[in-house]
Image (cartoon, rainbow, N blue to C red; front, top):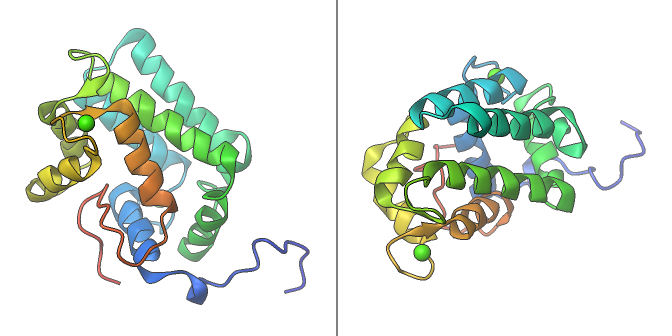
Length: 190
Ligand SMILES: [Ca+2]
Ligand SMILES: [Ca+2]
C-alpha cells in the first residue's frame, strides 16, 4: 500500500508479543458480540454492566456514559473502537498509546471508574470495591489480589485513584516483554 501515513507504518508481526497478548486479553474481555473488535456497542455494554454492578444513578451514571461516548466518538481515540479488524485495532492502539490526547482519556476513564467504585471511602479503593470492578468484567477471581497488590505501589493496602489509573496506563503503554501488569487477569495464550 502506498498511503502517506508514515507513523502508522508498522506491521502486526513487529508488535512485541507480551504487549499484543495484553491487548488481546482486553479484546477477549470486552468483545461482547465476538466480531473481533472492541467496538462502540461493546464499550456501551461494558458501561451498562459497570453501572449495574456499581449501582450508579443520576449524575454518576450520566457522567460515565458521557466519558465513554466522548472516547468512542470524538478525537483520535475514536479510531480504536472504529477499527475494522483485530489487527487494525491492535495497530491503532499501538499508535494511540503514544498520543497524549488518547492517553489522557484513558487516564480520565479509569480515574472516574475509581471514583465511582470508592464512594464509601473517597479517594481510595478497598479490595472489596476493587472486586466490584473485577467481577463486573467477569474476570477470574483467583488473580484479583495479585493485580491489586501490583497496583498498590505505596503498599498501604488501598488503591488510590492515581494508582488505579496509572496501572491502566502502564498496562496499555508498557511494551516490555517482562511486564507483570495483569489489569484484566492472566494473559490469553497467543
Ligand atoms: Ca465487538
Ligand atoms: Ca496504595
